[in-house]
Image (cartoon, rainbow, N blue to C red; front, side):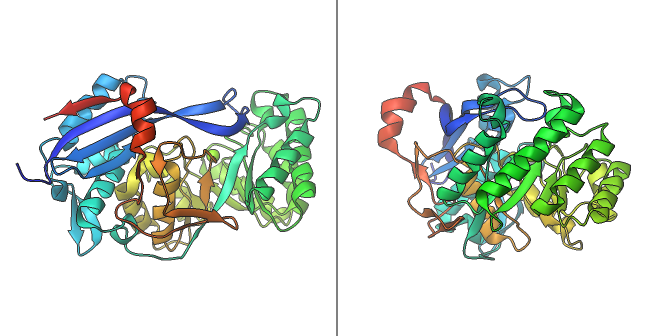
Length: 400
Ligand SMILES: [Mg+2]
């Protein structure tokens, strides 16, 4: 058998721990201390391995480990690694034959394909995505959930304390969850607390840290309160307002007007809930210049879907700002590779889970940004010693 034929694929649930407990957002109860990474390892007969995670697949209500293994068998086993993607020199120009529909629907699988092909050819994913567009990728701390609920005594002060810690840890950008009045507080009281938290964090971190807010639609049905929020936080110089309301042309037109009326410079961004980008409502928002950034998830959509999103955004001034939360540690190399290769990329979302199973020696976080010193594929591998001791017994494998 040829060495580059794929003969094995496996799936393993691996905990990715947060550095702290994460509270609620506008619609969901506490995130907690940990989320699983559904680690997928794809191996050739010659022993080359590609990595990805199947978190978005396992979030489907009808998903199971059994169905995931069937999918991996169908997608990968018996194929040559070189047939997974179509290339022009070092750059990937599209999916391999008969994989177009599968990689569109299961974008995360295309990242495993990139990693495997890159390692087979000794080419980095940055090169495969078109080559370096920048030397490092700035990252923002995305763990400022409704932390005030976790420590009622400190309230907004808890959020401020955690923001200060983020700055001490090297972050220069922080995103703050808002929208407390959508579910967990009365609408007006929730808006007041949102404003209090933003003020407290701005006071704590000073003027030079970039702050953005994300309401996960918590202001739906409350445009007057959203206007209060925009007016009250205008002095805090928010960099972006994310998902303040559900994507809708009339709503975003109203929001754009509010932002202008109150002298806010905040960008309007959304799109992480678009599961088949670019869907009609976002096309309208982009066409009418009602949003400034578009955010489908980097791992769920994968590199091939994001390459086609970028082609669609080319004629506009819209930033590609991939969502990268719920992707565990793997979200870092996936997001960094994408960001390094992309001219329109804004900033990497970081959930700050320390690496346990990956050897990520090529990655370095300093001064608020990730840099990457090279290495084929995504430039990460599994730390086999840790894996063997802790995770191998939970690994389920298909061969063929
Ligand atoms: Mg968000």
